[in-house]
Figure 1 (tube, each protein chain N blue to C red):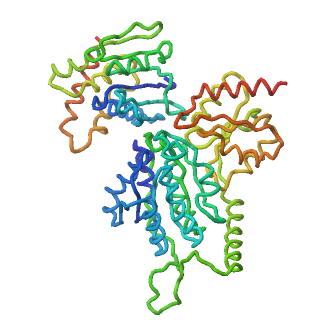
Figure 2 (cartoon, chains in turn yellow, red; figure 1 turned 180 degrees about the vertical axis):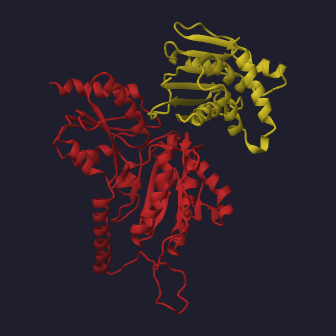
Figure 3 (spheres, each protein chain N blue to C red; figure 1 turned 90 degrees about the vertical axis):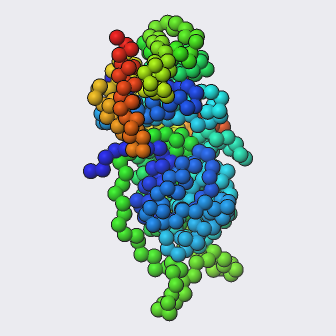
Length: 179
Length: 354
């Protein structure tokens, strides 16, 4: 558990940056070193908003993750862009409702779940990102279970406090999907 | 004790400035620095200060000049092309001995360049942001926490030495979030008996001015200013050393590229290569003492920068021919990767045995 490096990618508006922030806050709550770096360049206009998140027990060098242990892809261009960068023994999580072509990758675990459809069916439209974070937790145990709820309470702005419960529900759906 | 929060570097620069007593902010929006001004626009009115989006960068820096002359703690921020526009005003501030903080969240250049992170304003910051004989103190933070700490120190240094101080950040540091413990707010501001605050017939006029038509006068003021610069060079050099003590290959890198270099140094050590990192925290004054100390054991210096090779000049001046100095950089907004830097280290390590 020394260092976990992740790339989260999707269209703008899918909540990629929020998902990354959730993971980063979980690290912060557990007293770990944390970095969160968003893309802000022209790619933001081209379909692959992404962010790098690193959790570590040591000081973090480059916050730009070029070889992730975890890739979370919420659209096809994002998966295609980063699929070959994932480290051996890494993991790819893809929202199969948004990513039609999910390849097998040697030495990498690939988890496909239709998070966008799952969110809509549960009345949690727009929370596919949080379902994906729940699944990531189930697959990697990157933090303690109760830390995730605490991170949601930190990340949802006070004005949207009503969303806290829905976010927690989405997390649980993601976690259960691994069963 | 204050709780650690997760904040963007740009926002932390703004919040720390407010806590340092900054009550005037004048700026003009530009990527990748805009969050700083946006944060200021929200927070400044709540602490009773003035936030003003000027009609241009030139106007903004001259407002900084005015507020500084009146004794206020004042700041402006921009990114590379906007900083160039401020150059004239900063020169006037230096000539009038005015304190103020200027933040440059660098992007690629020259010209409009790009909007991705860069360090290609090193020469501009340390050599010649404007015309005339002058220097600024330049801080180069490399973490979000250090951005908070440097913002605080920048205001203190500006007031102590009565000069403009720059924080040279970049798009990566500005946009990224890291945990930060914000400094406690400063309760009192330093006395500024020289400020033009109205004499009310109780004292002689204070004059803030950078125009001296008599050559001898101007020379005298410049010499006095450079005596101050000598004192600063002696007392304000700052650098962090990481595994330098026994290093054969000493990397010199600041800001964002120092983080990349640090990762590369860790990988090199795992391979048994004695690499270390000197990270200048002040770019002016440049930490020559730290560099000189490493000359006794270093076989190679390697300057790693996000530009075509600028700080490497200062490394060469400090090393003064005693050890070979090399350069590796990416530019235009491309961020070097740890494996790229590691490859350079390995190349030099091969040479070190010859």
